[in-house]
Length: 194
Image (tube, rainbow, N blue to C red; front, side):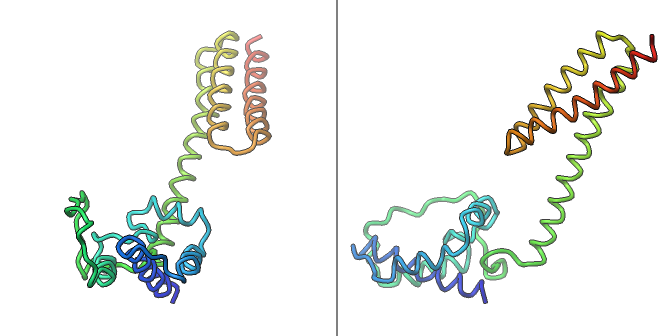
């Protein structure tokens, strides 16, 4: 039902846009229909823009969108329009048509895969940042090397946290916790070698 509602609202907005562009008039329902179409929040709209099929864009490349646009343009003098623009993407057919938004099962699968990829990346980075410096310090077993390794890895970790976390307090606490782990390891390494 939600997809049908979005398609109907998209159809109305295309008709309004044509009325504004070609008839130099602003339909009375323009604002209300626009508000209805943008019920979803801004973040949802932005996530749609990065998807392969933006639900907030009516494009002649897509079969159903093309039908909506052609129906709305029926009877409109097209003298103001330029020649068709060549698009890099393939035009789809009625067989390729998908509903507005994504099919729920596809979306759920994409969310699961994306979540797994993010967790895998975090596990890899975490392993690298914890095991990497420890291997270096044990292998080279020198206090200067241990201090330089700790400094370099803490700075790199801090930069990574600054680029991924939102709050300065989170960046500071995660970097401090990481530094504490490495400092304890350096301390254990220096007491063993003494």
